[in-house]
Image (tube, rainbow, N blue to C red; front, side, top):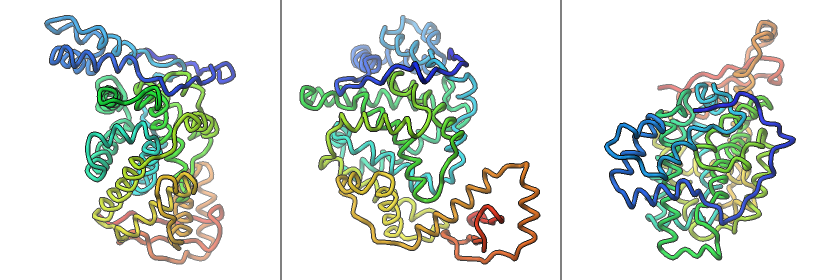
Length: 395
């Protein structure tokens, strides 16, 4: 990987240019070569993903031109990427408790993605919504965890390989949809640059808007770290540099989202079917997890409420998501997560003073935990004046 430690000048960054006709020429050409050359192209691609552009040189025959071009693009990191970024991993997202990442981030990101008919239509062609939603949840969960880990995006690492293969799956979907009669003159390219940017925004902006709905918010510095890492993910996914290099905060990301939304048709029946199946599959999977005290129906209601708060009532209703009944769990969950987050990010320099204050005040009052086997303590005073103890879930 060739990296450049200097940060790009946001004032001179090119304005994003996006049309629905934009696909991913490098990945599309690789799919064509895989179909043309078969095993020869696959071996060259697999070897190159693990060892770089020089890797295919050990093969019996020269690698196809498109495979070589893709590998060279992957090795040239976008300007401004810190060379240590892939080594660190996405430390911001890794700090989010897995429970809330599964309940908030993944459903919100996928619902945001499926809102595009140009994504939902080609996907539904590959299988029924229920089976497809379950498979996509598993595949997305595996990919995102591999991509977030320290070192996960280094050449040949599982996250690096999985991210590039996701890019190539998008190219395969494009090719299949066009071969089946997709009219690009009406809807643009299936799974276009706009749709890949939608996926990227799903795991950055939209995921954190969903987490904010349950009281998990990040600082300005954490926002910058988040987008610095995901800028490299965007590069591997084949998103044009002009779309992501100027995005350093949620405010920047909202401008990109507005651009994407302005070009995207509203959700269709495929969008609604995939979104409903995704919510059902996630609620069902989480209800069966060890230590979970909430029923599948309660989890489904929580996911619906999170999606309404993160996507907005209008977009959520257009996706067919029912308006959830009011629940007392949301204020409690929000308060517990805000307090937990406060102490997770507490400054070490003031820890001694906080401890002295906590010991000088009356003890906390216990309340029932959200998960079976937990005890959570709510303070009698605001979070900034005393400590909150949250025990780990029982194994």
